[in-house]
Image (cartoon, rainbow, N blue to C red; front, side, top):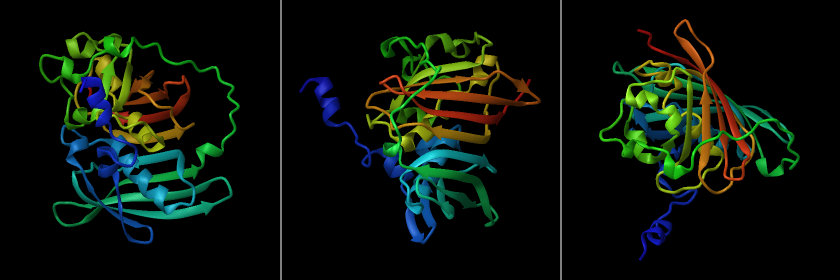
Length: 286
């Protein structure tokens, strides 16, 4: 069988992929869900914030009457670890077109105390019920063809910041934003890449919550190194993505007092802006 045909035959589907299995929650009681956070979505032993957002997003999708996240705002309170966790959800308001709920993820610390890791407030609706009218001045990012971009597997050795999550992503970075990997950061605070899941699963609204936080931090192109933990992250899901790889563009305009913002846009293969986000993150200076 040709290589392309073999890859197509083993392509994962929505609902039956590693991402779906690793974000699946088990209902314990109404509004309470158990999950084992996978070590496969870590960055330098820290669980990725986009993966965590997808976990809480899945729990809220089960707890609320509407299927799709429209806006999700998360505050990251303490660092999550791989292993058992519990998600507690609470409906806030249910309307005809939107329902709003909140959710928190808890784990136990080394002393056996329950610790809240992340708290989310989100509104859900039905993306398929939205009108087709689009009026926008936004344009897709200019990124070279996928075959002209580079992933972690293209380097002679793992680049700084690579991690377990890299094995689960199809991430090809625009060479113009790769100066940091060569010891020559551009100073522009930009990161652009083609994005998908490594097993070929198509994107859906839940995986968009991962996509906005899956690229290397823009701080690398500003000449900074080390972990860039998220303090707050808000995601707007605008429409259901078309089949095919996504394009993700992230920019930072202001680093001050040890914090920076990252504005992300996610575009699908039909040139539609399918998700937007803004996050505040802490950086290590010096």
